[in-house]
Image (cartoon, rainbow, N blue to C red; front, side):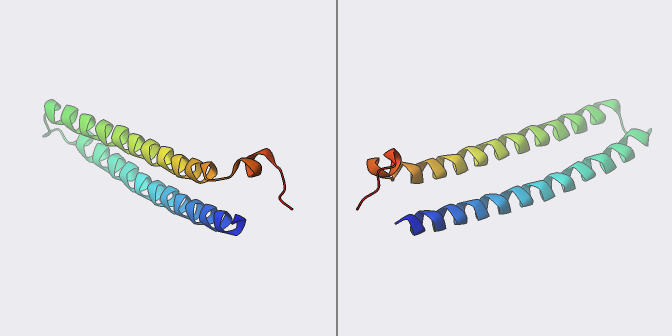
Length: 99
């Protein structure tokens, strides 16, 4: 039984690591895109001020939602790990060895 829990824990850790790496990659791409957009828009005198405000609002919303999404996924990974800890018997939790 312990081997099954260990295997499940490894699978969950692997999936969490894959998510974290993917999230970091997407975040970097979005941040670089924001920097490029800012350089292009800020230097262009033909773009109205209202458009700049909308673009800034849009970028802020993307960052906020990206952070919220990461928080939700991290919370659910923790819930999954807790779920498997709840499946342990009382003797396992107390540290009592079965003979």
